Image 1 (cartoon, helix red, strand yellow):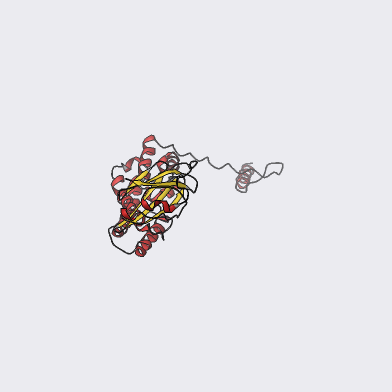
Image 2: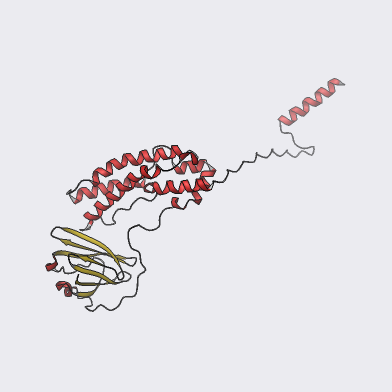
Length: 291
């Protein structure tokens, strides 16, 4: 009798190990996988911390964009401005993350260290470019191309926010809630306006009327407007018209000026008032008058 009991128990053990089916021959269902514990939601302090971190390190996520046309005759000033803005944003990473309390965020100290070290190394190089004056335009174009290409693939040397978000559900939730971690949609520092209906220009398309410094003409992108020599102009050109903004550029014997103008806005160039009377879709009404 005891022998039969022992054999029955052994059969049960073997059957369980071999995943025997039910009495009717149907295979037994495998046990359900253990339920995963959802990651705890971030605290308001953690979301605020990540917002400040993304604002401080935005050069990694939304870097300044280089000029669209590197061959434009007015581009030297834009290239200098671009290099200076990149240098400034890289330098600010260390300064702006210094006020963060890394213990408030998962692996916060490691995250800050990875980004600040990378920014510091690149800042040294870009700052060296930005501090050099009177270099050839071709050299500036090469530096801008190099820097913009580097920023497109810039990653921290160490822990990356994207990697941490993929590994930590709490960080992923904080990233979704942090508005400053989203790419900016518009370039900063440039006016943006809706194109308007254009009024009739007093001088029509007769650009020659601007030669004396008093005119109101209809212009298109790349239009070269006769430069009033008595104001020191050697060249005046409409650089672009898009998004309700007209970009104009003027050259003088000692330098150049560029300015974005939306409808109704004016600027003084060497004593001449240059005004965007109205900016439409690919066309604009431009006026000159003594400033």
